[in-house]
Image (cartoon, rainbow, N blue to C red; front, top):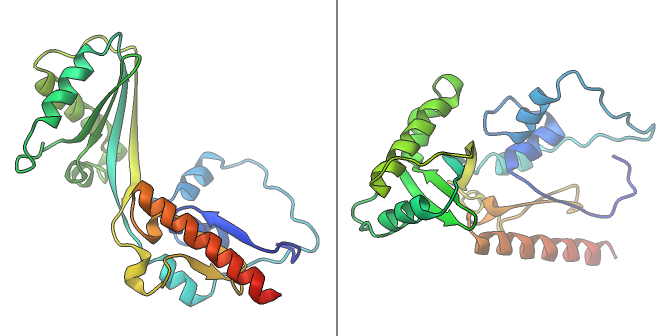
Length: 225
């Protein structure tokens, strides 16, 4: 980087932040690793002559390595109407909290005949390290569970998309590792790292992370006078 910037705020998973600056060890939950493999062979952008690389110090790396994630499989189906999706959603929502579904955490019936289902973390842990990331087995398990909930065979599917959502929910937040306000900073406060991992994987967690990043940016500007 050059020294012409005032503040940079990066809102991304901490493993990708580490990859961005330190090209850390390979990690299956890193989107940066995924894109690096996808873009292999493509030309890299040229760096300016006054480029100065930034390497994050050990204390910052330690705080960024604190959070961990749990994953889920997410299956989106495009159907011809909402009847099947409505049945499955209602059946799951009427289950008691003391009787959680063994395969599905969520079923959502959306406008236009769209059904979105998310697996349990337990299913993801069982399958994600198997051949192909467990995608085939996960899809089969979710479809079977949906049919059981709806009490009927799956109607003809126009389109289906399965996502191995490796960073579905933060498991250990950065606050547990002494980060104070949740956000992590470097370069005397000019680099600010934030995201739901600073607090919790929820809308409120994202909002708190954004507010903390904004406050940190203001403090840096004021202190630099």
